Image (cartoon, rainbow, N blue to C red):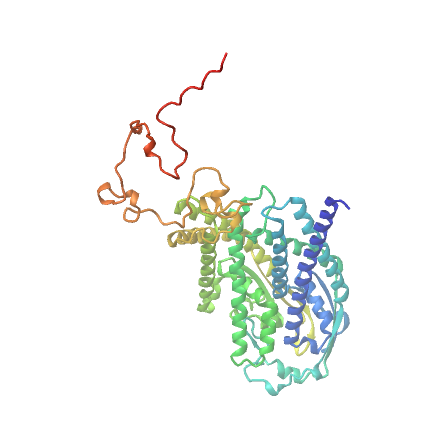
Length: 547
């Protein structure tokens, strides 16, 4: 084996190992969150947890299910029961995306400051192939049926309160409306709900999902290398993209904390609250972000599905026709809804300040630097906000009559406007980025958190491939970094007047005058001095030979 072939084999092994690590960690994390959420919701009491977990993971990565029902209640059986659900558990999706992106970005750092385009394409292809292979296995295993028996549910009317069921989930409200009382009269009702994963659409959705996750990772990972010619991503794209991703994840963490707090404050079903938050906290939070930024939503709700909507949405959608949902219309029913817009504005301002701190400033003036931050964050938000609108769309069309709820003809559809999200995202991003960049400049934090690959010679850092200090790698005069203290008269002795500086000697101009010549004498020689001085008199000439 030659040295070149051994090096190629090592690169191939490293590529395969990195792809295996990223995909396996992502699927393990998604399966863990899905199984824990289903267990806390009590779903494992009515069906096999394994197939339900696999189906939920497939849904989370863009897959599709085919449900079927056989309901023995109210005379609705067989083909009379059908359900169409188009909603993804974004809690599972976010967990897998974070693990997949983090491990993939870490594996790229071994390539150095730059990575070849062919190697990057090979790494992405390896991750996609392995991801789709595991997703195909889950599609095969994610088929089962859930049998609901009213006599085994244990939801009789003994715990019912006069005002409702007591099943109050934050963000959803009271979803019962006397449900336990009606369950007590349906002890013999049985429902066998089957579901199967559609392999073709699920693999296509999974391919789109993993490509989108890897693309967002490359745009937001500030310390990952990029191919030659993409260096502008370090200075313009990645600071804004990473800041926006950080605040969106932080908003989800706040939603999870709110769910945990609601479960700990005496809720009758704390497990269900935590399970619902694990699976659906990003759905509620990321649906509220466009709404808080004044992106209008369109929605309809009919039948019993109005009960699952949080206040004040039932009062707005109760007419049964398509309605426009905005902060202003919701505030007419509940004034505290305006706090949603305040929170979203603060979130965008935080993203602007982070963008200013992570964008290399160079020699730009504060206003020019603020404008550059505004343009970068505006472009990032104009792309991110429509993605949130698409990801949080909800469409449910149900025809079931079971568990005391007559859901024949019930439906729920909720989604935002993509063109409005694009336009408002650009406006909000530019305003927040400009204001955040200006605040960062005033506070002295502009460019302080810039990644090493994004720093240039004027930023006090090293270019790609060099180490600090940058002056050892950049030709030209010495340019001190911004961290050095400027010189002042009282601390720099060279800037003091000659009379006030005791260390300053008179300055002589012109050519120096050589000392007068003085011939050395033999008496000037001392022992140990070197070299030996020549004698003052010339030695006698050598004697002539006899001729």
